[in-house]
Length: 283
Image 1 (cartoon, one colour):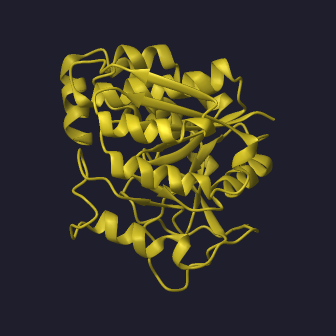
Image 2 (image 1 turned 90 degrees about the vertical axis):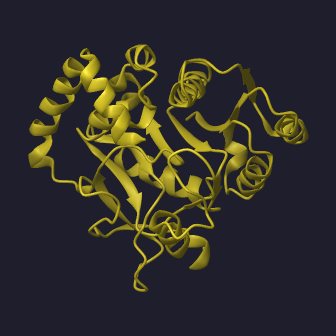
């Protein structure tokens, strides 16, 4: 089995250093191809990338591509996934952003989920975040959820990659990647830990920063498995998610409805007004 970890970097040197340091603590990292997608323009970031260059299987440096920041993110995300799936021929690709600190057992959790569910045609991948903060969370439990992609840290399978139609996503790069693939992912389920496997330290974009009182950041930190102890065995225990109202526990009986919604999404995307509405939704 071929496995790839993609890290995307923009212009925040301290955050990419913290992210790469946490990656070096990942169990089973030596079994992965490591792809670094680095957007040029910040000399301090380039110095950090050079320091860690020996761990990268592929280093891709890009110029900003697109008219807005969302397009930069989408294009670089797609590029990293393309290298993982098409160049390295991976069975699955894990993607993390530079503002993430990732838990040491994250890859082992992903491998467990892939081994258990890869023969299920409704398995789309793994999200690594959780906002469940109650004190009775078992750190080794997980849920099957119908939701889109956690942009900061997630995995998709080769089957999912083929399903989302990357060339079509690139044509609409002004709509952030997570929003474009959401409807395809919701036709099945994402395996999601009940205790978060990442902390988001984002300081720009749609998030307001780790020093704010924003519930997203605070809940991720309180849920982080690093505060509960690393585990190595996992079991299914569906918990009502705390993310968005449209994040729900997976029920296969509803698949037909979400397949229809996915098809409608791509039809509606042809109209500029729909594109504008989607941009406002994820901003």
